[in-house]
Amino acid sequence: MKKYLYLICLLCCCAFVSNIQVVSAQSSAPYVRVGLLQGVQEVVITANDDFVVKDVDNKVNYKFKKMNEVNIRQKDRTVYVNKKGKETTTLVVAVKDNAPVIVNGKRYRGNLIIQPHKAGLTVINRLLIDEYLYGVVPEEMPASWNIEALKAQAVAARTFALYDKLDRKHTKEGFDVCVTTDCQVYGGMDSEAATTNKAIDATKGEVIVYLNQPICSVFHAASGGQTDDSINVWNVNVPYLRAVEDKEEQSPYQSWAVSVTVDNLSKSIKNSYSDIGTIKEIDFSGLKKNPNKASKPQVVKFIGSNKKSVELTKTQLRSLLGLKSSNFTIELEGNKKAKGDTLKIDKADKKLIFKGSGFGHRLGMSQWGAKSLADKGKKYQQILYHYYSDVNIKDMYK
Image 1 (cartoon, rainbow, N blue to C red):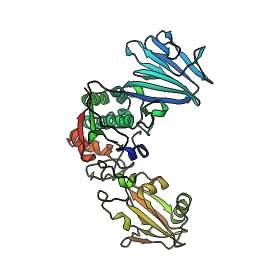
Image 2 (spheres, rainbow, N blue to C red; image 1 turned 60 degrees about the vertical axis):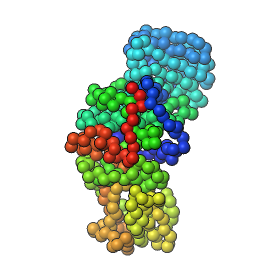
Image 3 (cartoon, helix red, strand yellow; image 1 turned 180 degrees about the vertical axis):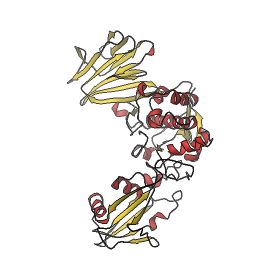
Image 4 (cartoon, one colour; image 1 turned 90 degrees about the vertical axis):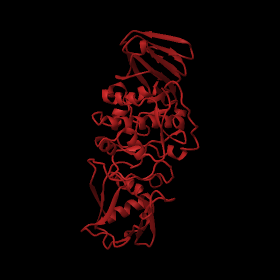
């Protein structure tokens, strides 16, 4: 996720209860395996101290001096360490005194695991979870922000990493989390900042739990004044992802507008959903439900010239039109608003104006909202309890 996680959890959320086991506190921090690269034919490795490349299958150790460059490449089933090639399933790169390892010019803490696959090499960074967070939090939130907001981000990021690890969605690929917004953006040591490292260290071991399980602690850039409910975004009830007011939020996304002609929206609906002809009427009555009490998502109904209709959630409309968020209203050009629950349309060349606020899926913690609350004196625990419903913050390790 850099700052805006749009599709980060669409798959993992649906299994938030069934796949996760209860986690008890442990004395030491867990490790996490990060998938740095996949499907590459070669990778250049070096390190800030002497290092060894261990061929696990053949029990061979290749030793190298500090800053020696090693080219590891795959050809068919053979993996070459410089010019020495053997069939193997796993190489491990370890550096003396835990000095950083360098992969294609980028520095990382911990060790490397390199595995050949049909599509190419997979390069995995194995390190302690808080060392991983050092490279995550500054990618997800500006390191210059209030320390309490950074602490809230650190706890949310730690929780999300543990959730992903337990959810096992990348296990078949050989790692726990990826480096993209499908999990969390990870930049390694080159992304680290003193302020975010301080926030991570200050909250070491703290995890957000629901029924003693790490939650799917999604976050987004800005809610626009109210977060959303999981039923509207994922069409599933996640008890701790409820809509909450976010009136304190101040962000660059307070107001935005996008226009589209009735004809173009009709064509987009036809291409992606159903041919209803040209839109003649929009029914907003499906938006009246209280999001926290609804068993079905809120919907907007489009009625076409061929008497057919289609119901779309605001999330679907956001995706269809590339909108910044699902927090929007719809008007017809000329400031023509709906009468009651219905907006009548007489011409296909008229424009529909989507007026909105916020940025992202609006589930869980708003990052700009967290900043605003922190700037007003709220502690990170208060921020997290505001955005995630009926949860606890638990010390999972020391």
